[in-house]
Length: 233
Image (cartoon, rainbow, N blue to C red; front, side, top):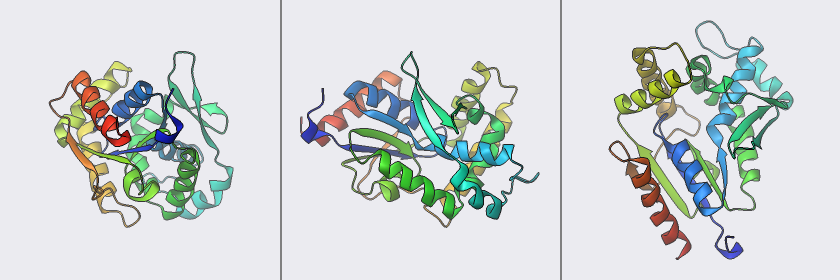
């Protein structure tokens, strides 16, 4: 069990499909911390918007309608018997649905809405109040937990990230093309890095990691070394 005095907050930020969720989840399991997927929270809000007709045919969200609906959107996480964490939207398991391309195509504009970000940042900060967590996203080290003891900024080329995402989606049975996935990655990169509210950027005190050529084992070892330094081991 972790020494309570050494419980820290680990913030992992990066572009979509950079592998940050996988590394965050594996690091949390290795050190006995709780893992929080902040991106899943934005995807859940996006799914709610899609299912309630709050996203236009061009992908533009109805900001007023969505902001008014925020009090009706409850997001939580449930740990399954196999140890995996599923996203719950108003009590329903939506883990599979939020990973579909229709949600991926709509999530960045929804996530750029200031009221949505404020509401979810508040919830994310509440989840981390007791520390001992690993949270990944776009603004964890800059906005959600600027005082996090360990910050990692992950990057890889758009093509590398699209190949990873395409492979993952095909393995899950999605009927998509690599070109569609690459276009989605590039589009989301642009929105995430140029939005006015909490744009994706590297925190000044974050450690950069380009994991393009790293195996999962190499990545795990590198992350564990950063963790041990952060807690003084």
